[in-house]
Amino acid sequence: MKRAIFNKYVDKICSEIDIPRESMFLKDRTTKYSNARFILYNVCYNRPMTIVQIVDLMKENGYSVARQTVEYGIQNIYEKNDPDIIEFIKKIA
Image (cartoon, rainbow, N blue to C red; front, side):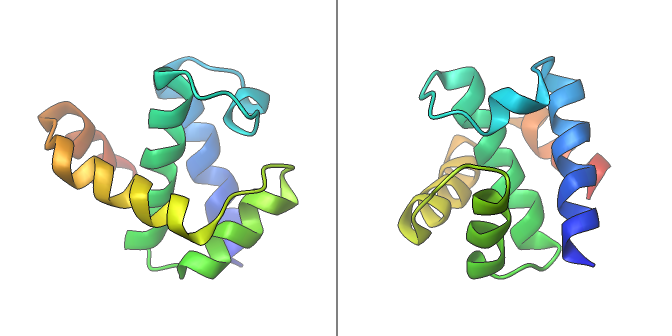
C-alpha cells in the first residue's frame, strides 16, 4: 500500500521539478536532485511512513540511502523554510 503512495509522490515531485523519474534514484548530489529527494522524504514521513519504510522504498528503486541521510533530508526541508517548497508539500500531501 505504501509503495503506491510513494510512487505517486515520486511522479508528482518529478513533474513539478521537471526531472526524469530515473534521476530521482541516481547517486547525483546536484542540488536539484538532492532537493527532490529531500522533498520526497518529507512528504513520505508526514504521510506517515517510517524512515525504515522510506529507506526500503528508495532501495527498491535502486537508490541505497542511510537512515541518517533520510533524517537529514527531512530536517533540511524544515530548516530552509522555503514558502514555495512548503506550499508544494501541502498541495501534494
